[in-house]
Length: 324
Image (cartoon, rainbow, N blue to C red):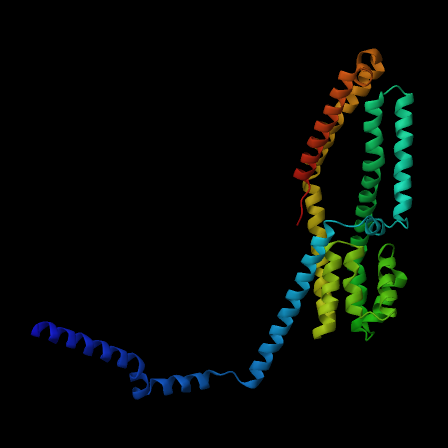
């Protein structure tokens, strides 16, 4: 019992001493004072603190701009038809577009029925002509307009840079571009001028360019102008760097197009062989191949072939189109 009491007393004393060593010794030895002195010496100067705040605010502005970009990209997945018409450069209303699609579908259905294509084949062709062909036309016009815009944008940015270096304000330099640039760049910069004239800040007006022309280069231009309007800086240098980036992206796109032309030619040949063979067989022996659109089984086979060919063309297109 005596030995147990001594052991318990020893353990209690050791525990109390350890706790005192951890919590009381730093105050008695001066370690807390030394840490406080080191912390006071390590504090940044007011100027350094101000520079850090400025750098942090610019970084926050860039992050905000990138978040806005991501939000616009998410919205782009479900673009309204009216916006798609504007992006394609058409001044149509949605009602006019649907009327045109319906009339085209009815005309194709009537033509296929008169030519003896059968109801099922005529309905398939009518559906493709009424819903697929107009939307494909919109995509084609939109892509052609974007290519024309990208072709003229680096020269327009260079004009703005020279105007700023010559002493012109940014808004006046944009007016020079809007007066002399080719379409569609001229119309887009005129829209920026009109938007700014009704009271919207110039940075926001330039940022809205991406909504009408959904290409990364237009978004780069809008972000540069928006950040410069908020935080200041050397705008001519920033736009000069942007012009260099745009030209480098253009060179990269042309290089990719040149390297992928062989694959595109192969895909075009493979995709066009079945329709060409079908046309040649029809010209030589029309009674032999006419069963495809006169007999119900042939119509089902023809629809299946069209579906599988469409899937193959889509896969080949995805394989030879590169994003960068």
